[in-house]
Length: 209
Image (tube, rainbow, N blue to C red; front, side, top):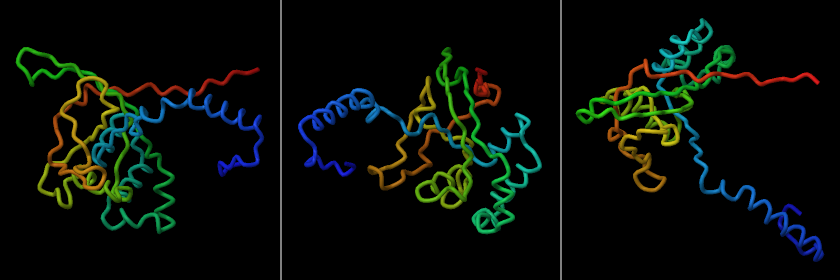
């Protein structure tokens, strides 16, 4: 009865169906409007991702080779059509990085230390995945294309990644969900590497019977 047609149900079946719907709404109804699909995501530029992978000791020859393929103008858009390049890119572990940042901003208002706390998953943005409206963000972060006169941006955070100390957030779209806003109007500031903390990676616990 996937179509929603209840004409073949008797009164008891309909009562059971309505009770099931009521229970389902009670269990998951709150998720409809309150879930943030960004889910603490932060986009990082290719250069930033390379620096962070080096700092945590996970920059390997395989990752270096994949990185070169993904950032070389001659292969950054064609690697998935060439079997050998595709194999090299997919073999490397270019995974998201789970980080947090905690510190104080002391230069905005004299005599005040304004705390901030960010908890985030860092996703590298390469040109090959920066399609559609994402192309604007990639160009702004890498200072290419129509943003070639701007300074690069290492990280772009979504609201859900900022737990404390939000700084003048901007909407990505200027008119509803159609026109990407002028990304030169983003609030850009510096943050020291020393305030970044890698989240503890815990493996699943396996209990023997």
